[in-house]
Image (cartoon, rainbow, N blue to C red; front, side, top):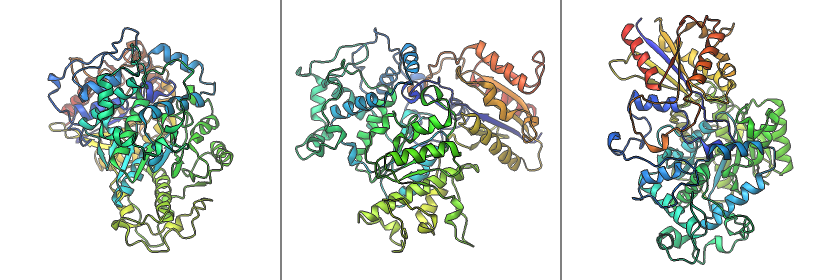
Length: 614
């Protein structure tokens, strides 16, 4: 064989728990991460380790038991910040209790708690110009498209997404660049000190007396951003409409503990964005929408919902209609709301009704092709896969409405958009959201460039192994629902056949999924059926655990995965048997399906295929 084609389809396999970004989504797309870390140099600018992995210190366990220390780790650097952040993961009993009560209306309590944290930090998020995006599939890619288009148009952008591949700083980007380790640590410890000083209970500890002079108080009061935010001219001290100016809504309740993982990161992102003086913040929902930590933004400029599917059903609901109801929780009064094209009628009807309930003018995003006039040059996308057309369609609507709002407020445009004709935007009315692609066609050049240069690692990404295994192509995607895996399979089939040309490649897939998922449902797309040309061509299937390597190895602390059960060999054997059943194999024979104890072991098996088939 002249080439080995390797498909790595990784399923987001954190436990299906409420608010999984908060509890266990901090180490997602783990197989994608292992490939980037193990096979090639990091392709995410700024995520390279700052020192040799072998010299990294040990990090405290993320246990949330009562014995956890309340003392602040020293030194107060990035690694200590991330290790402390990992302490804010919820334990299994708390997760189970949360799941059991998911049917209760928790939105008020959750929002009040987040607003209380914001109040204690004296952060006025209403100063941010926000584009808010929810959805099941493609919301991260949609956000990446929006940010790239606006950045190329000359605006100073902030981007908050989840999960991450190599390091937690990927979640917070300013002007397309990851927040630095130094800035991450500075904001992290400022928030930590300020919350403790205002009576927040640290993990396993007691709240500090608010009148007691401590190092935390000194650092909180001496921070430049603190003095700015607490000045008499700050809107947070005078505006009753600001979330941060509300009276404590939890004063009669037990003292608040530290915000859990995703909430803490959200607070950190808000503070970093405010301090950076951004023009726009593109905000991706963590999970759901209605109860999400990001949903304290009361006055976004525009909101959108990407394609919906079945995921996180234990917290969002059992039907697409229930899931749509949760996602539409980000719609706001008199704020334009959009849906991706192609939503199924049932959930689309729910989105429309929710929009009416809150008086949010609602519209479907036009297809990308509608922005191209007859005979015009087609729009190019920087992200591979036909499915990205849907994400780009939503991104274009969100981007154009935000730009139109700038025009509506007489804020003017950057020089990159100076050539916009006065007719741009046509008769679009923000208050009724009568959006049509023709109003914004032809697209300004910076938006076209932004679409074409969008980069979003781990999503329909193709990467070649380093020599001497450079005959191996890796196809990476973070599909994690049956619907998205079906799309991923179609992309892999089309792209790998194109890359193979007249060669006869070997195709392999590395697969893993955690307990709580149904492997058979996820694997159906790769099973034999009339439409699946790939199924008969999968020569090897490797089912792996989430153990990265057999030998001791230390990577960025934010990528440490601690999901119990995902390393259970019994569970792995069940997944292997599901593959056999799907392929109608006799499990007593190999048939190219095998379990691997580590992700590195699976990659080594692929390398051996490369050596055996040069």
